[in-house]
Amino acid sequence: MRDSIKRIAQQFIVSHFPESDIVLIGGSAVYGNLTTESDIDLIIMDETETPRIECYHFLGWKIEAFIFTAFSLEVEFQTARYIGMPTIIKMCAEGLLIEDKQGKGKELQKEAKILYEQGPQLWDEEQINKARYQMTDFLSDFRSSEDFEESLFILNKLINTLTELILRANGHWVGEGKWVARSLKSYDKDMCDKLAKYTKTYMSTNDKTELISFIQSTLDHYGGELFVGYKRCFL
Image (cartoon, rainbow, N blue to C red; front, side):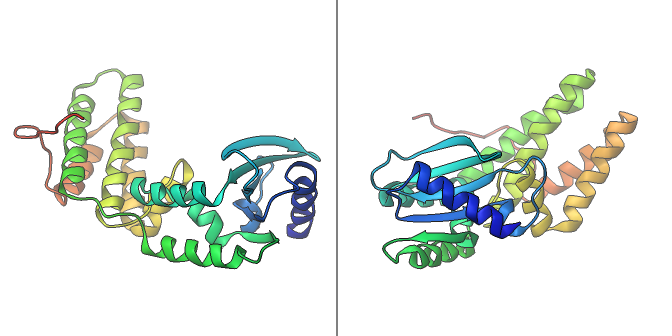
């Protein structure tokens, strides 16, 4: 399967980006865990193109092309470290190099691997306090909500904010979608398992007690709930 994906990607590049200098295949195609919903993720370095993401159908496959110039990729790397989302860095670090016209592909991968291993910028006290303040508001809403549908959406914000706090306060990458769960499990499997367990209990019984207690005790490790005295200046 990997060889066939590589051939499709190479044909796509010849057809759509013949001036590209570096091309890497990332995502599920690299790790060998393709599903019927998988697409082919490509990192494309092309100085003649406008940096963008663009999606295609090609030879029966969905292709997600991330197109960069050297400058825009460097900006992307630094932005990723600030917001804690390593998607492009990870694809560059672990991707399959299929085109390297100027011989700079391995150097790019080396830089990406170093950045990925360094992790994102560590959250400072102001960023931690902002998350604590948000968690306090969400917890208040969740405790008082008697509407199950509303509670589900509040809980979604609670879990995402708590997970981001845990990971960023400890210098770990976050991710999006399924990668949020994978990142938390990689950092602390026991914590991830407990969060899933208490959420399942709430979903099946509508009893919030254990889940709220777990969230509060976890938040306590980072200073607990925060309302009175919180201050943040607007730009």
